[in-house]
Image 1 (cartoon, rainbow, N blue to C red):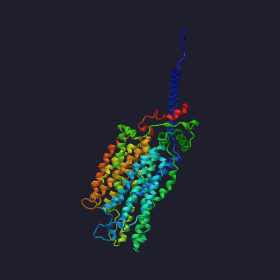
Image 2 (image 1 turned 180 degrees about the vertical axis):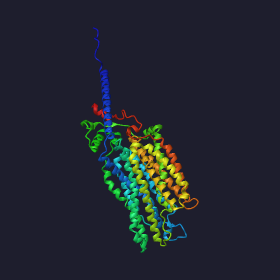
Image 3 (image 1 turned 90 degrees about the vertical axis):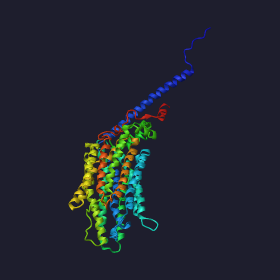
Image 4 (image 1 turned 90 degrees about the horizontal axis):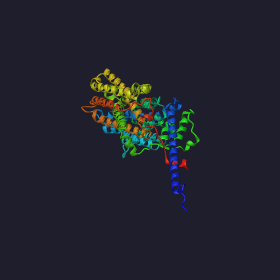
Length: 568
């Protein structure tokens, strides 16, 4: 009898078909989950980008800004303190005046005190920029303030001894303090950027950075008040003259701890930014909860099963970093932000850290020649330096920041930066070319100070503000802090080079004779800043995701853990 044909598949064929069916179902579920995650991510981002101005944004501005207030206080107070340090720890520079009033820091001492902080800032910006992307913004936010507080306190304890030099100790502590200050730049920029909506992001970030102006103003006010408080004791020369000067500079430096200590607690209460939570920690549901909590809108409800919806976004790595920045459209933005900050800080710190030297060079507020007492000469010199810096802060720094605040979200970042570099080019060339003539008469000195104030104004209503803002907007979340740190570090490299050049060039042909040419060089660098600005995109009213130059469709992908849990 013939065998009957078999109409049923073998067990091997049946198993293969079943496995193929399950794989198709798993792939379908995975794609569905990925689509759901991307939709939820877009919903969270839309809620952040369209949020109305709230008290949370005020808190972010205050907490982030308090750090910049402290940064500026610590950085720019040295311009005044260096004069006092010269009287105490310097050497006699003019043989015709062997008294204490004829002392000043040597070139190497002055250079060390002034560049120690920018060097520390450079390393801090690179280190904390990288850590901000690796560990998270919140996890290390506050560490930089702790370093600043410890280092500031350490400066106030520096003492001269047989085996130790006070200036050398001060340089070390200011280097450490600079590392903390440097960490503040990328972290505060990225936090304020990632929490803000597209409509107010420029103003929030400007408000944060504008605290640098208030910090510089506070440094000059505190210095003026402390110096004035010691007037009677200093002028009477009752045997405690040098002790009084020693107390003055320690008080001026030490009071910088106060705003940092106040801000430290609040920094520890700032939540992680939703963009980091989603794009780096791959937790969309937690980001949604955080947004709903701090905005308090109730517009986004997380489903119970959303806790399991963790996804795989693009992962930061050396290879991915190289791939991303190997594309000219991305690399040119980093080159533009880094070089623009580099040339800006050449002029900005070249002037700001040497403002006392410039005021003395043009004899603005010089001590009365009729004074015979060394104490009276020193007191009047210090007080005049304080008043001169106070004028520069009130007339240039503060108005410049807040003029930028008013128009940053309407004019845009790029036009303001181009305008600033253009105006600074003209101002520096005029100041440098007319330097000799302007310093000869009191009227000319007043004109020079007015031009100086205008330069301060257009630095802050221009590239000093925009070079801080733009790098916090134009890079993807996984590299935003790192790229901002790189850009900022290039700026501080410019600041260090400017200090070295200023100290070694200014006395060519005689004391302070080459300052005019230095100003002309600053003007030439500003021209190159105009060119580098052309590499940067306009960022106003645009989302951070659009500016990252990455396709956001299918940005998040489901990983093996989600697939396995879904199919089990």
